[in-house]
Image 1 (cartoon, rainbow, N blue to C red):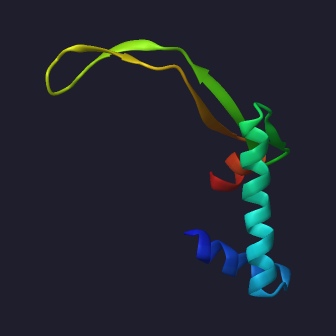
Image 2 (image 1 turned 180 degrees about the horizontal axis):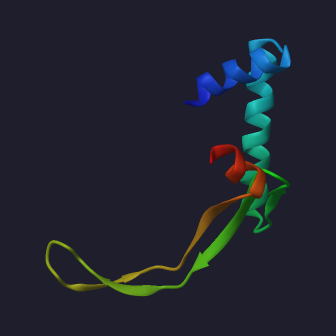
Length: 90
């Protein structure tokens, strides 16, 4: 399912117009993104938790040349599925 298909499914399930469903889906994505960018987590009981993990700087190798190179520290978004989602999938 891509974003447009999700918007259509939300519109059908909720009875909203496609335009209103687009705004709702965009608002959810924007809220999750802004919350994670602040370093906070989004916990949706029964669905899962979006969080942020910090990765330390490390040394890797350039695959072409084999030379050592420094990999910068970064922040990665993570998602851990909740029990309700796991049960629904299995």
